[in-house]
Length: 273
Image (cartoon, rainbow, N blue to C red; front, side, top):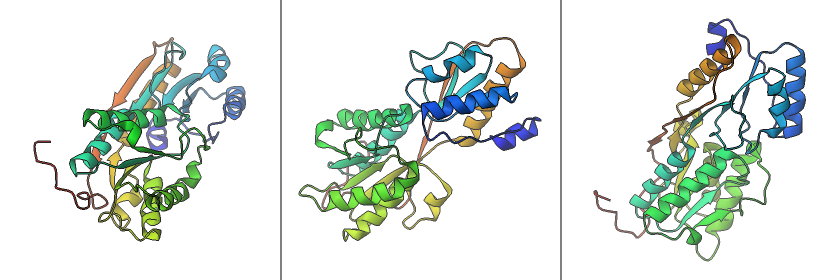
């Protein structure tokens, strides 16, 4: 985003709100007072009511990695990868490898993008004739704070706990790549090997995904395209008269590497599956 903005003569400031609505409002008020023209909001909170006063005072805004919601301000643009499709691609990949006992590891899903990923996970199970209620959603989704910086440790704890239980999953869908890396480490703690005894799929395709051992199967977000579209939408709102709201979903892609394999003691699904 910064590289695109600089090339067009704009400067970028970074404010980390950690998904705190009060902090977002405070940052927005300070930025508006300092003459900032537009904001890219990346927290993916379900409601944007807290920033409505800023929009009414002229601050331009684009929501990044957040699909449009019914109560959004009419002028808001929302740019996101199709999170539900991405999680569905990941889950379908595991099912086609013969996995029937799956776990979704996330922590809290109180953001739009995480809810969409959980929805895609469950949709893939239903499409395959599997009962979503039989899958594990760890650790109950609504009971844990977001903990983005703790994602790897969360994944590690999940794998150690679930693989030591009475009905261990053979495959994991992680909320992001750092969580997936933690799951791989937790599997090792439990005496299992990712890519052999258990399969793990991440989300994002960060740089470490291909460098990790085993290299992660993951869902790639097309970040350069998303950033370019986000900047264009924000600049259109800054440079011209009021622009109608827009919602754009960009298609993700599954990148298959070595952290996923055929389910243990299972016959691989036919090629037509």
